[in-house]
Length: 193
Image (tube, rainbow, N blue to C red):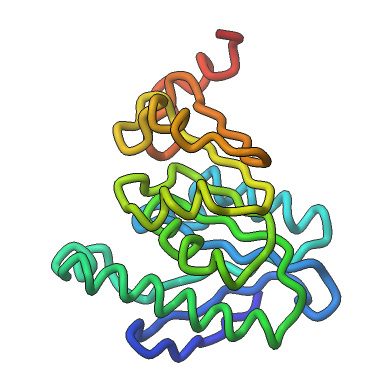
């Protein structure tokens, strides 16, 4: 795995962890959630699935701690995310052919910022629906998309998902799952509802 320093103005320390050969393989750009890094189950299996299909997975690492993020103003936080998205976009255009964007919760702000720039399918994992930018991007996006949320996640209530309906967007609410799309009882998730 290669680490690419992004040199993001406004997002010091941002980098990409690149697994694969972006010049020869389809490229997926993955924006993990703040406290839900690429080692956690949903993004770990996303990464493995991409690599199994001979895709390059480029995962953003912001370089700031959750504590620094929590102490920052909301506008500053959003600025860090969009600055990293802009730098990652610059890298992508010179590295290969982007085929997919994946974003988790807070990092769906990056997908919203990239909407007009990257005409590719998107995977929205527990999207930040309280952000008008994210909700608007979900509705306006003309590309195919997958939105996955947990029914028990207060950040993405099932009724909000109905408001986002559009052709090409498949929305799935996972029964008994919370914000991390995980359940306190994983075996119950495997049984039919």
